[in-house]
Amino acid sequence: MNGTNNLNTNNVPASNEYVFRANGRNSYGDEFNPNDDIWRFPLGGGLFDFTNIQEAATYEFFINSKKLMKVFLETGNYNTARTIFIRLNNFIESIENKPINLINESDVTAYLMRNNNLKYLAHIKMIVNKSVAIKAPVFSEDACRFISNLKLADNGGSRNEAVISWDPEKGAMRPAEDQLLIEAINNAFEEGTLSLRQYCAIRLIRGTGMRPISLSHMKICDVRDTPEGMLIRIPMAKQRGATPRSEFMPWKPITEGLARIVRLYIQSDLVPRYDHLDDMSNAPLFNLERSTVRREYDGTIDSHMKADTLKQVYTHNMNRLKVVSPITGEEMVLNPSRERHTFATQLAMNGATADEIAINMGHASNTSCEAYIDATIDHFQSLERHVGQHFVPIADRFLGRVVKSANDTAEFELYNDEFEGVGSCSSGGCNAVEAGVAPQACYVCRKFNAWSDGPHEELLKRTIQEQQKLLDEGHAEVAETKTNIIIAITDLIEAIRQKKDAA
Image 1 (cartoon, rainbow, N blue to C red):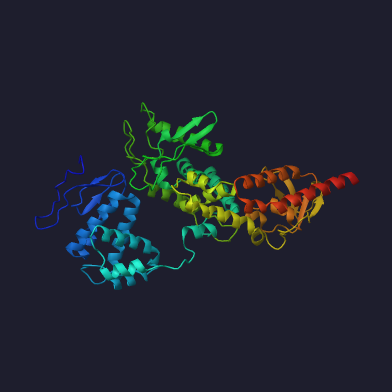
Image 2: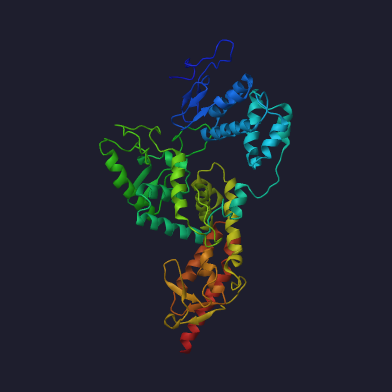
């Protein structure tokens, strides 16, 4: 098919039936004949099968459903249209009285009250609004009014609420959980239970916060090695009406650790696969494993691994690890969305503004990124809940004990980020390590044995720098949470000096 005005007549309805006069094209560029009962999308992946709707509804409802989905595909994001189509099909399957002419108010009530379907209200409203706008009714007028007026109380289930509350299933992972997960993934790769291909895909999702759909669109040319380090270019996703790889986030640096993994993957897996090509830059970074290697690749996403497959690579392999959260004591719920929230929250914890987070996440607006700042404030201001009864957040002096490391008999030793010992916990350990706030929080704990030969001045300097950075970025509330720690470390350093002078 060469254009949207050229109609494929393989399945043109009879003269007494409705005929779509032009082909459609989705946001990926896939062209389809709306007169067909099954619309196939090679680039988008998947198909829209109207057979069930045709069997369950009147002809008018069937045609209006096609009109509706044609507009969703042509004017919006392909994945959103696909979700809407699935939701419409499920709704139709739930209705007992068939054939369906219009979905009425009682049908809506029964559907929304069944199996927690209220969470799909936003999708149902999208269907209603679009069908009314294009005059292709699938709901009765009473049902439209009922749905339009229906509002749900905020029950804490929104995406922002999950982020702010650090929801253990939908929100960001706590620092201690994230660290434990890093160790589990690395161990799985070293033991051979994760292939290099799987390991690289998982690490890219974790290390950049990108969506699986963005990773599925990446090509080798989106990875650039420079003398200063590796840069990657992430294709934008979920932009209305945009085709794959038409828009990109700015080139961004990645850590050297992640860069080493990407280099190894390209050299070990991709170069041997594409070594016959004169130019492998347009080859997919993650290809379909069973696809035939073509002589040349272009700017399309043909032969790229689908987003759903990459998501399965992540969820299947991560769930096999069965990592237990040190915070909840339960097996961690892991998915790419949580990784994305964790990445954004870590940016906020490092002092990034909402605008900076939006740029790094590929958001058009910074509005939704304020939640990550709020979550960061909550994390620091609620340390006492995670550390336990020994934590004293209002301390204005060091309350622990000063000992020489060689004379310390406590078995639970504490380290800073460089794994240099700073002291030990005489109670055998509270929850500071699990909560990801050790060793800084330990300086305001009564059970802390501070080593007189520990790198306390270095830790003090770093804490002051962290506080100043937060102040410079406008995060005064978060910065204030570090004041007591700074006072306590300063008090400890003075106590150590006095002991040395007395000796």
